[in-house]
Image (cartoon, rainbow, N blue to C red; front, side, top):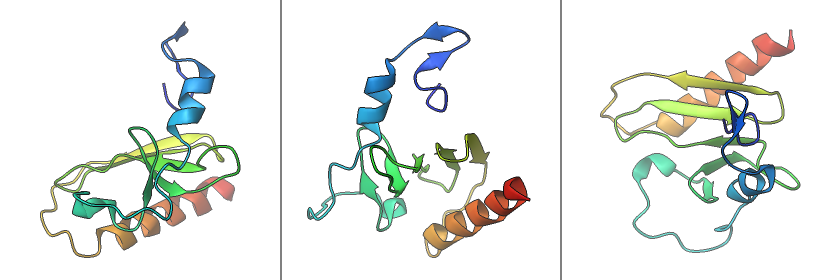
Length: 110
C-alpha cells in the first residue's frame, strides 16, 4: 500500500498526499530521546524511519522490528522488501540493512 501511494487491492486506503506527508523528515537536527536502538542515525517521518532522503519525500523508508526484521520501501526504484530475521544483537544492524539494500539495488539496476 505504501509503495502504491496509499492504494491496496484497487482501493484507496490513504491519499497520495498523506503518504507523501508520512515520508517527509520531521526530526532532522532535533535531539531524539527514547528512540529504539534499531533506528540508528535515521530521521523520522510519521510512522516510518527515513533511510534515504529525497526532495519532497523520502527515497527509502522503513520500520525495523525490535528483534531484527527489516521491511523497507524504495520509492525511487519502485520496490519493497522484507528481511525476516531473529537477531537480538543490535550491533551493526544499521550497516547490515544498508548493505542488504545496496546488494538488492545493484541486482535491480543490472
